[in-house]
Length: 160
Image (tube, rainbow, N blue to C red; front, side, top):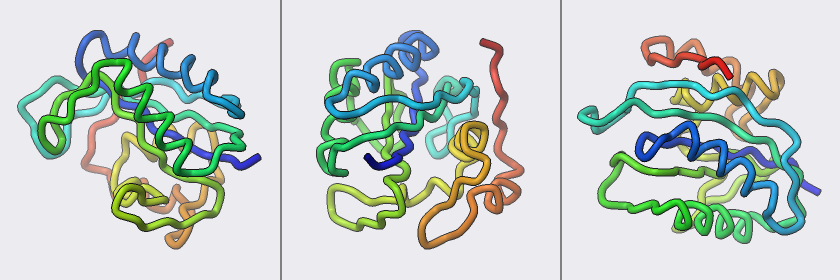
């Protein structure tokens, strides 16, 4: 089994419900179990600012799936939630990002691990560090070292 982390985000069609449902669906991926779920966080959109705030979370998985198979499973869950990729940073019903997969580093046209911008995003780092305060980003270092660099990004932990 490999420990993997998945970032979840949504800002359309009741985003809190979308994330709760997606967390449950992650637990049904073959050879995979969810071992930790962060709280949900509200964050302002990055890039395309004219859209609703996002709700974000992170899940820790134990999985026997290879990275490509896990990534394909994430895409299937997104599709089942009506995900449409109209333009970069567009509003979405659900976004699932494979953030980390053990200590693996992958750079292919389809998949990059660790997620290439995770260390620049407070909405990823805050929930990641909530469930794994010692998280490391392969090739970069300890995740907590990057959170201070994201100080200008608004991220609010939501009550359960």
